Image 1 (spheres, rainbow, N blue to C red):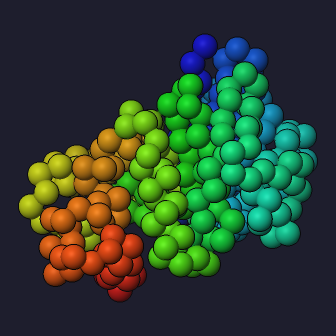
Image 2 (image 1 turned 30 degrees about the vertical axis):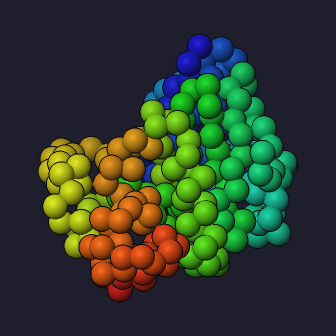
Length: 255
Ligand code: ZN
Ligand code: FE
């Protein structure tokens, strides 16, 4: 049976998401920004929390873990490289490890850059990817602990997933990301269409995610840094893609 997901807002602009396996009843929370909205979403769907899959150590992704674990006795899966910074871990994972949520099979992809040990979870069969603060719709995470090279390589790993993969990210930043992206590629038709869609969704107070790999490839400037047109747009024709990426990321930091 295919996986089911439930997306909900936490804190100010964080997303919580539940991943449910109808076959076994298992349910994972991807990150735990705070306990109450996770509990509310579980209650809403009548699901029982069995696992928490952590993407990285930042408090806005981990602050709810202790309370949820105490209440649900769920298993906490977290990146091995960030284990000292995350509480209540049961299992640590690294590149290539398999993480099962009931009968759902996920694979760990190390996606460092935002933090040094950041990981993403890819459920191939269900065409789902949970990318935390590495990729956002029309944007990417700030490079806080890593280097532009690390982040660019992480984004390439995500970009290489099947085009129809549904992507869940850690924050609702899309509207601001669109404003910035339009300064890089003002004439990109896919981006302009996305801009209109985001205005509509925001007016309706609806989320702009999940997105897909195919969509992001068409309008996310950070996934397009190796296109001649994008290098040209910022007067960097002939520069290495990672340099173009680093420049776009630095511009966004100051935007
Ligand atoms: Zn973060
Ligand atoms: Fe975050």
